[in-house]
Image (cartoon, rainbow, N blue to C red; front, top):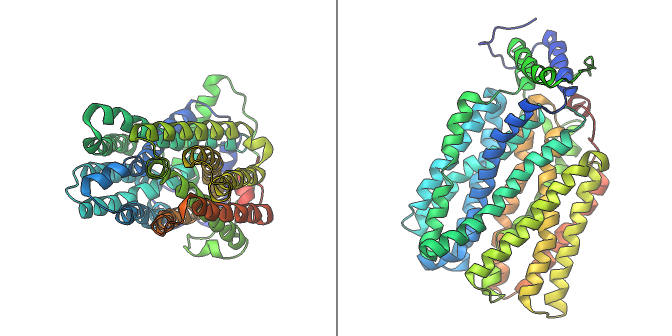
Length: 472
């Protein structure tokens, strides 16, 4: 039973389940080819600029403080406002994508946060900047889980971890470029104008979003799950054609029965087999992100205020730490399918423990010079935190069935946004209370240790398993 291409229904009928299972089985046996490369390039461009826009505020926070003559506490509110918007965007747009599809919501997210980046560049006072960053966060918060979901739904089981993690590294590259661009802009136009130009560059996703609206393929798995099997089959045929053109010999599809037919229910991830997975993911997302944002957002400012570095030196150090984190992430992509998601996540948290311990002991116990400790601890923590968060994007989207994959991934990543709201405020409160670097890293240390325990005791392995098998 099929439906016409223009017809959409709340959910596929039981008679369509075999068609959906066939679509999934056909996709699972196709090795990565030019179709996946084009898909990753388009999704990855959006994800790159998501990272670029998300972290831009951190690398120019010192300049913004100087421009508007505000305190660290007020600056932390601007940072947290952006992440509050991301939290809301992840929830609202994630649910919308299950209703209307991944493609159009992805494109709208890019256009949204690109336009708001322009407005942020034109901010006339601290209130306007806070509002624009809050609204921009709606698009930023939804884009990455949408892109991760769509990418996962086209990748086969064999190399899904490697390709997905390499694609996700583009977010890390997006985190790397703002300090480099800010350094060039500072030398060219001065510190007080550089942050506005940096935000203006963040408008490029408007063009990418318009292009995606017309060219990005919808998820074949999502289409099949909605009963639109003719469209789904046509898209899978395009992926197969690329494989045949390259000379690949495709095995016969090995059909795994999909989870029993149900319509999308927002609360389903809190019931049955998904409850423990959801609780584990929420805790893991929050803990990894708390460490990540607590370190990433404030390090450039701490290099200046506590380490005595100049603005240019601070940006160079930020580039150095971000480069190490990206290289570590790309290395993890090479081994994720062999080692497995669970072990790699434990390793990522263990690295965070090491970095946070260096910061806690180096400053808080041995009273070593602040700048070398900040750079060393920040580099180690950054390697573990960036790797852990990037792996979580792939891992989260694997643990749920197609009917709620984007929504559940968005909600889980909402814990990333929640941590990004809370973390800067806590770091700011510690600094305001003269708690110092040692106290900041001590809090991160506790989170990292708890993360090791949660993953080691609750996580399930998904490596080399079909999405439909994992979801049962």
